[in-house]
Length: 201
Ligand SMILES: [Zn+2]
Image (tube, rainbow, N blue to C red; front, side, top):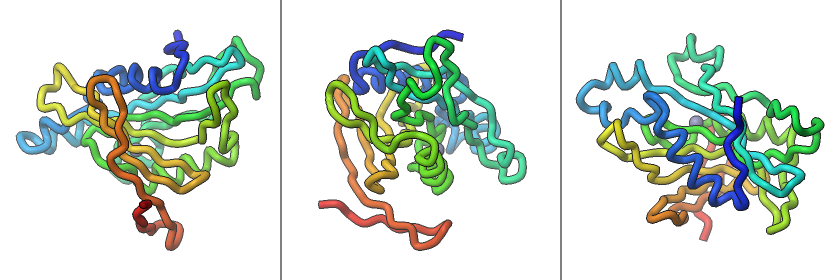
């Protein structure tokens, strides 16, 4: 299966990945939330992939997965199982640097405690920070969202991001090919399941 890329910058990669993920079947179901919530919940599908940095100083996206997590059957949640490592036979293990765990949120909701725990767990396997030719990039999880009311033409409206190294939670919106940060908070765990946000000035 073909990977997606390569891209010269991660911003370009995100601009391409966002509409790609959101245009997959049932990747955005906000338009059904009011008219048919049962159908929205039943069909909502999350897709996920790694954005990684290659020894050629390019950004590439792994093949998309829509494999549900085993827990989903019990919890009724719809999440996507992202493998810890990318299968890219061109490179030896350890040559690829993992930067963003990408996925979509079909209802456009913020990141969940599952998302926070997942990327913190990934930080046990991958570098917290990757050195690139254009500076350092920190490992993070990203969830794209669309506010589109038209399922045939989902717009890429933005994404939520969490960086375990700094505990920063951000919201970015997209207008005319540019990302703009509209929310910036810091996550503080109170215990394993509960957390609160503190505003970053
Ligand atoms: Zn998520």
